[in-house]
Amino acid sequence: MKPNVSIFSLVAACAATSVWAADPDDAAFRDAFLSGNADWAAVEARAAEEGGVNIYYWGGNDLLNIWMDRVVAPAMAEMGVTLNPVRITGTKDAVDLVLAEKHSGKGIGQGSVDMIWINGENFATLKRQDALFGSFAQSLPNSVNLEWDESDPRAMLNVRDFGVPNDSAEVPWSGEQYVCAVNSARVADEDVPSTFAELKSYLEANPGKFTYVKPPH
Image (cartoon, rainbow, N blue to C red; front, side):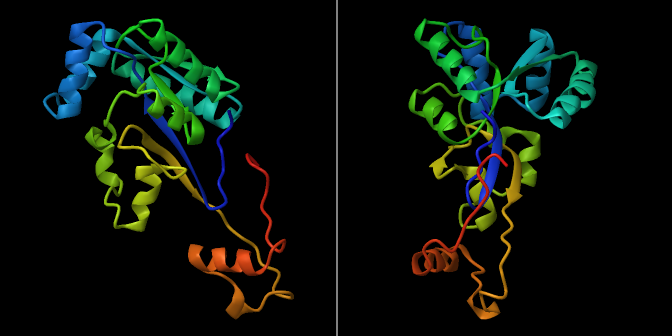
């Protein structure tokens, strides 16, 4: 499915997925990484050993496809890992595949889906079904560049997905601001909302006076 846009922001994230443990070695490595007992060098070595990764994502964006093919895939190839981008028309298809394989008894390391570009209800579905890899996001090297403290408003894009706590089971792909245009002939400068709380009050006091584009436009 194309990225879902809320009124205020969009968060496109990659959620690493797994299914029930079957291979003790795969399960042990996952647990070691999540617990901090396996560093990133060990992850890179393991990736090269396994040789490839399947990432499922909405394939309707030409720029994203070119970036995957010309930037990400060659960079991973230099590390000895083959990237297999699986371009789908609906994220739910990948989620359904994960759940079908999970319920068929496939275990960690045996599923078809390694990563999904996901957000919103699709992430919530995997979380409810206990089909996520675990709390990996803050163990990534790049996590130092992200805010995780929930007391900081900047962290909301990183710790929640459409209001659902992600428990670090997904990592932000990108964040975007929603820019509103105001008709100054109808709304005085002092009445223009500048915070979410003010916007909520404005919406309640002025029904039918606010509109926004239909996602995913």
